[in-house]
Image 1 (tube, rainbow, N blue to C red):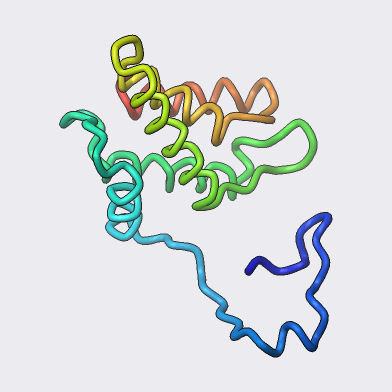
Image 2: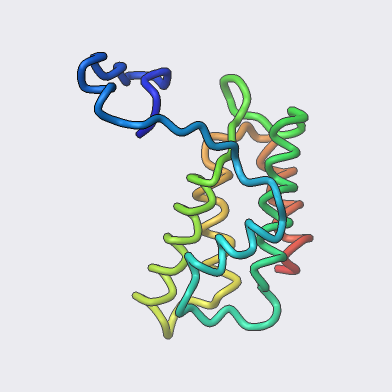
Length: 140
């Protein structure tokens, strides 16, 4: 259950909250753990040797680092990347590849998914940096 600290969310009443156990779990930062996470989401998708899950894990950590150091930012404020962004991007890519298997190449689907999951809302300068990182690291 997500906390009510996010915008538009309310805390559960105390009598309901008592019926649940609360766990506080840190975000995954280990490259190997992220690789397994990515493998699990992309199970059944043929990426080829070029787009190994460890490459995608490294790219995710790089983008997250750029957002923490404010090298990339949104039009209003900074950006926050999480596993939720990564999972949504990978699920979008998986769906795109399965639905349009003949017309979509893996590199195009991956780029579109990353742009959707991580590039949305970036300012112009940040989008240039984002595109540079994606195209360089993925060899697109």
